Amino acid sequence: MPDLLWDDVKVLFDPEVNGALPDVVVEGTTVEDWQVLLDLVRAQGWQYAYAVGGEPIKLSSAADMVAAVDGGGVPELSLSPVLKVWPIPEILIIFRMYQVESIDFDVDLRELQGQERLDVLVRFFCVIGRCLGKSVLMSAEGSPGHPDLGFDIEADRVVLMVTPADLGV
Figure: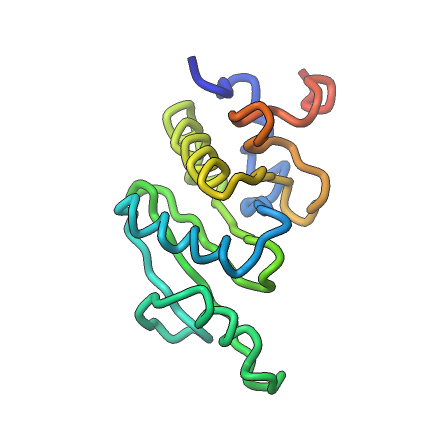
């Protein structure tokens, strides 16, 4: 049985209601956690593309990502590393390194319609959460800190973090 049933959560995946790009975050991370994520992407065999400042480059290490964000201590040289990952060809997940202390990423709700696609997202959250040993939280676009669902490290699965009444059910 799936962690989440589409009929129970489909309102959370309505781009007209929640925005197309919900905020997903793993909080309390370190450079080592970012490296674990990079190693995981490679180990899972997921397709990926990496760019710094909009320029595609070879994905190297988390330390190099941090150096790009830091700009070598010169703020005007800081760049935004972006890692695009496709767990399946039809679903794009975009990781953005804004800071070391959190792993932030976007998913496009228009690509996550139906039980099959929801199951892919749930598996993705579980793999990342288990590998990092941290919760993975998804909030409506522009509403960080108020998660609707996520991988709960204590429960070891993806759970709904709002009540059915909050969903209008």
